[in-house]
Image (cartoon, rainbow, N blue to C red; front, side):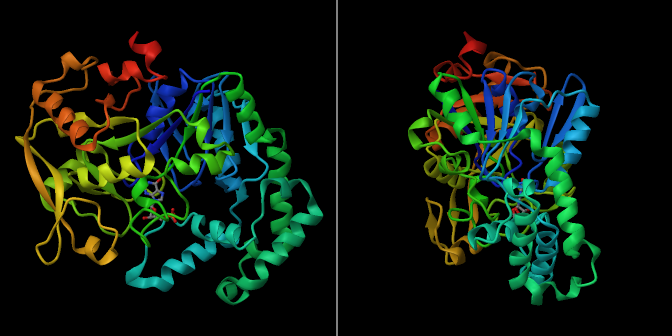
Amino acid sequence: MPGIVIVGAQWGDEGKGKVTDLLAERGDAVVRFQGGNNAGHTIVRGGQTYKLHLMPSGILHPGKVCMIGNGVVIDPRVLTDELDDLRRQRVDTSELRISANAHLIMPYHLMLDDAGEARLGNLKIGTTRRGIGPCYADKAARLGIRVQDLLDPKILKQKIVAALEPKRLTLRPFAKDPRLDLQAMTEEYLTYGHRLEQYIHDTASLTWKLLDAGRTVIFEGAQGALLDIDHGTYPFVTSSNPVAGAACIGAGVGPKDIDEVWGITKAYATRVGAGPFPTEIDGELGESLRERGGEYGATTGRPRRVGWLDLVALRYAARINSLTALAVTKLDVLSGLDSISVCTSYRGGDETTFDEFPYHQTILHHAVGRYEELPGWSEDLSNCRTEEDLPAAARSYLDFVADFVGVPVTLVGVGPGREQVVWTAAARDTVPAQAVVA
Ligand code: IMP
């Protein structure tokens, strides 16, 4: 003990990587538990920028054990490229451990992701086209290829044949694609197996040992609560569960191993891809927030949709995750606005008011935010390091969020650098921050 889960409390891209990187400094190990290289973290450290897609964010701290849990789907080409990049940047990756039970993204998963989106036309989800959905679908259909299969040429080939069989019809347009050649695919994946073998491990049992020895383990989520396949805005969601409960499944621990759940939210909202977004801001203001916040996808480069902070959705995220702490990132981006809108309820298509996040998709699709206007501030926040440094209006904004959601704000981001954070007084009660604020 203790186990600390870090999850996105919105639609992903909240800045989980930066927070995990900060908390990892206080912890002993970081385990990623779901998603794949649809995620993208950018961490700025010592003037250098690191772009991570699969690697747990703790990898930048020498000596910390970094695990890719069984719940993650791994594209081994992306993982080996990422390992090469990190080595080039002189990052020690020797403490990486990859679960033997994690599933692999295969070339046909990428093709099926493309084909699925093309087939949906206007109804497309706007996936990252990294093969995530088809890979999780094969996992559920028990046709998945797992990391351990990379070490057994015979089994690997057999499993690829079995996985391809039911996909013949859908893959027909790709029949001549060299990536589908059985022999070539098997050989390519065996090569990845050789490269990754040193890292393959029973990550669940390693996690138990660390927890039993009293070490601090950070469970790092990808995406966000509203992209959860069960609790998000289905079908405009990812194909895994980015909520805290999934840390247990995707890392192989029990609920009692979790002591704290940190939800990460931006001071405003963004979403990539299609689907309902009740607080979306169009026009010039949306454009200027996008530019100021650098809101372009770390994985796909797509411009993100931008909106006001949606407290109805955030309170819902707090509930389904049992959040114990909130980290609010990018507060600096809101500087210079006369007033800031926060969404405190929704107006439905027939003028009904919704105080709670609606479970019905039709209501959600027509919902638009009702707002309270809070005073803005003009000061540049990038050099603030304590709560006292923040302008009164910025502090009131944070208090309003914490009161509405019912979860204390423990950490505030005021710029891209890892040092550009404010630990609040509420952080004193949390495990990872104690050493910082003591
Ligand atoms: P998929 O995960 O690639 O299948 O995409 C499904 C939906 O989740 C799309 O709307 C994506 O834009 C969104 N999505 C997936 N990963 C992320 C992420 O890391 N940040 C933000 N959106 C994401």
